Image 1: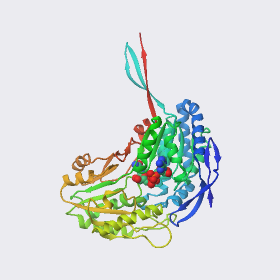
Image 2: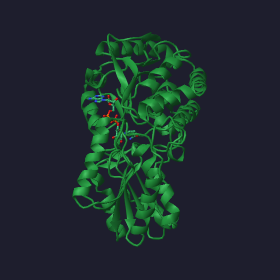
Image 3: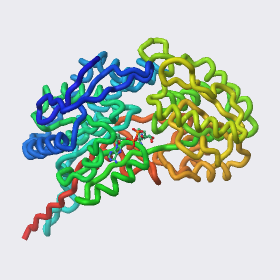
Length: 476
Ligand code: NAD
């Protein structure tokens, strides 16, 4: 059994007890991590608070150098981190279209370097004989990061790097399902960062630690990635000291395929953006609306790809799709498919869990699906693609928008100008043309409606870890 520690105030810390982390490919425990308590959280917040004055006054060039150094540590330890991510998430090392733990660690390195190079320049908005007015960006204080289980390391990196770059200190509370790579990364990071600047507390779901983060009077901001119901609860609890919030929540992204598209030509790309990481990515395509003239042909192509996908243990190089990350999610995915079957959906591939050990579910393509079925209306977060037929473009845009989520959306067409006009009518934070879910470290990403508040990445994301101070200097 692998063993890990929390890092609080620069020290490796155990808790009174431990809990096990399950490898979803086997259903068996592979690691033991500290079961942190609210007292451990208090210690971590106190350490972050104590480290804040010095870190926030550290010269900008030095903070930049240290954030680049963190990227170097990720790179030097990439093989171990990849294996940890694969064991805790089930995600393949390589994965469908190269989306696996290699991408998770590689993306973490890339995001860290790009974030290190971002600047927060002073903006001068008036400078005349009367006065000079400058707008300064200052760090907020202690930032808490709460992460989900689907991209545990990369999402922690997305939270931590801009927070540190802007001069904040940080406490991470990783998902109880996937704390391992994060605990390892924070231990590594503390070999270069001053003590207390970056801390991590692992805790079980019912420990009260997540709720205590949201209520904590000494935390100034929470950056949370996870489900919409949890985001809502955090927002309520965070009101006590008016914490700043970035909430990256659930998605139920629609893709709309126009009739001018060649079904054979587009199927592989559509399959990849839907099924990578087994559909367990916030911005995976989750509802596919296809024009009736190409509906049957595209359904059959997608089902063929689903049948051909190599499903297995993510540690095997050839695996494209791993298991569903946890038993509860597997049961949820199975229930959505059963509901769709009962209401007349046509199962073109999959439709059942795999027997044997681990939490495997066959890649599933469903045709003759309609809005109003749970598999369309709810975020599935699993290897399922419901395909919905449409005839009228205005009607399909309003069906795509008729959902509380608003993370991403896409339009697929050879007519880029028309597709762009349609995409701008989608109520979502990012709209793609002939692509879906493709993100990069310099372009803002976030949800509208109930998919979240605020954005991450680039200077827009960095500014969310700051507060504005206006300086007005009178000249007479
Ligand atoms: P979750 O909401 O169940 O848990 C997320 C984290 O919140 C975990 O660390 C958990 O321990 C913690 N938590 C639980 N209850 C809490 C509470 N009351 N107070 C504070 N923290 C609490 O989400 P999940 O199942 O781990 O992740 C899947 C969800 O995340 C999906 O809905 C997915 O769409 C979403 N997600 C969104 C994005 C995005 O960028 N928008 C990215 C990845 C995942």
